[in-house]
Length: 177
Image (tube, rainbow, N blue to C red):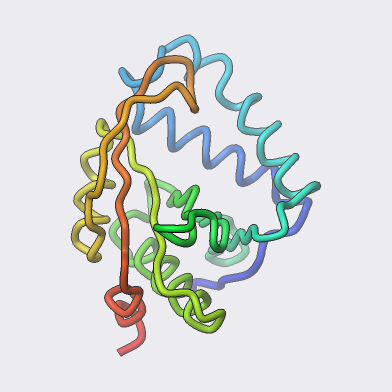
């Protein structure tokens, strides 16, 4: 049985480990092998420790557990962008649990949470090399609005696409029929 809860400070290691593992599994060839094999875990530990110890005012982080084992998380920032709304900065599901509706549930719960705050849209960035994530976001109503090259994560230039949900009703109904 899945359980959902807000992250607490002590969750930073588990979140960082899943985040690093996800990058290692999905971004081989996008980031260097050296970065993925030797640096990503330490870098993600620092990021998540800071996010949980010094959260931004508009930050939310929700976790999914199965029998008290951590399997997924979503992190976002409410009203991060004046045009696109709330940023979904991270959504990662342990590879053993992909395809079980966890990502959809996290996205739909987030859409409902935002609606309760009178927010109407959200967006995220997905790396061009992550074909499975692109298929998932398009399947749940995300609209590709721009593609850019950047150096903001990892150790190489990346190509990423902004996916936007201008109307959260598309996502709200995924698991709440």
